[in-house]
Length: 169
Ligand SMILES: Cc1cc2nc3c(=O)[nH]c(=O)nc-3n(C[C@H](O)[C@H](O)[C@H](O)COP(=O)(O)O)c2cc1C
View (cartoon, rainbow, N blue to C red):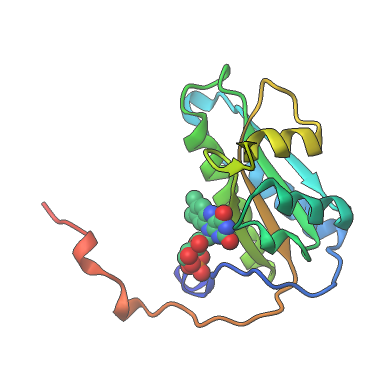
């Protein structure tokens, strides 16, 4: 696991490769396996494989959404705040499990923030909801851009981690 975490980087450039059904299924499983507070399971996932729709999702953000323009798959990670008062935590864990599974599959992934981000005069959340026909009851945390990597980035080096962020008591 630590080796995978050292390797994982945000990828924003992708090839034209298409994800297979088993790859998509593995990502679905990774999301659904996420734990949730009180096991309430407020998270709902929207998988988008139509590249034209995925590319348009980049416009949900004024800036910062470009990874979506050429990627094979977008996953909108949403949750129902009426089901859990800590839906942000639950949705973040589901998103993290999906992007770590993407790395395990040799795919690249980038988290595109939606919650609390603007889109023109409105919000990125409303724009994403409109484009994907996401029901009003669901809040949108992020969009994950997932595809075949078309850039290489350096692995992290354990010896360079900022140990000052860790406190021992
Ligand atoms: C909560 C969160 C929100 C992020 N939002 C965006 C985003 O909107 N657009 C983007 O291109 N990257 C986004 N990222 C990716 C970060 O920029 C990236 O994780 C960070 O720069 C560290 O790089 P690394 O992922 O390669 O380790 C986000 C990451 C997190 C965890």
